[in-house]
Amino acid sequence: MKKSRLLALLLVMILIVSTLTGCAKKGDDAADPSTSTTPPATTDDKDKDTEDKADDTKDAVATTLADMKEDAMIGLVVKDLTALFYTSIANGAKQAVEEINKESGRNHELVICDDKGELANELANVQDLINMGCDVMIFVAMDPSSSVPAYELCLEQEDMITVIVDAPCDGSEKCDAVIVSDNYEAGRLEMEKLCDKIGGEGNVVLISDSTNPNAAIRESGAKDELKNWPKVKVLETRDIKSSVENALTAMQDLLNVYVDDGIDGVWCFSDTPAQGAVSAVQSQGYGDKIVVTGIDGNATAKQLIQDGQMYGSAAQFPNMLGYNGVYVGLNIMIGNKPKDQTTYVGVEWIDKDNVADYIDEDQ
Image (cartoon, rainbow, N blue to C red; front, side):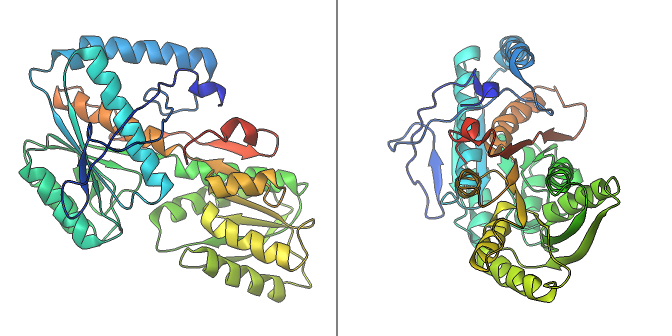
């Protein structure tokens, strides 16, 4: 386990489905994997700095959240708990509630609702949580525009705090807080590492998704970083609807189109298309010639990195998104609004030299 997770606590969580659309309360009977998180942060904290922030966080719990007059109900609405990324967000929220209850002596309740990939479930889950008396809604929007009806239902509740986590949707400036990974830095860092790996010169292609707001932010960071590498040429930015299969097809085509130019590196906006790009590169015999990178640091990417098929990934920490969502939401309830509406969770570069330190991350 990496050093910045030294203060992690063992999280024992249990869920039971309590509605048809997938709401579950903390404390019922089903095993859940342990998770590690660090206290709320907007930067990549390390070692002593992390320990200091942990102490500060616990002090804040004792002096502020303990002053709450009543226990709060926290609702978390996530896209699909079969995806480890969203399970990690849930794990982070669970640990935060466990810690806060232990330190403050309160009994805040966390109810998790699984949209199961359906917009109808998302709207129903939000309504269910409101009917249950939700005080803090942590909302992971399924889609920037299609999730607006569920999001606006949250905003209509004058006495409920709304915190958007992971991906802002249309009108997110109206909510109480937004907590996201530093997507610009993820895209910039990935491009920096890719350009350095190919020796500062050569041809690269970008695989992105114009329907994904985070992809656009990451691509912006990548293109700004490219200004520092005048000898690196972008042959093409290929726009796909993200999936392993679509990326595989796109990469096969790119290899055929630019067979004469020669592709030295592939920048992918996430690890999902990176997986498809790796498959195409490997199957056509370019495994030792083309460098493939991604963003997320998920389990598949970490395995590909260990196997030497993928160079690296700018890792997100979804558990910290859920963890910070709880802390920020409860603090807003008692009048402690964050200085800025948006809190950024830092990213870290993973490659073969350090991937072993990240294997235990639950993503």
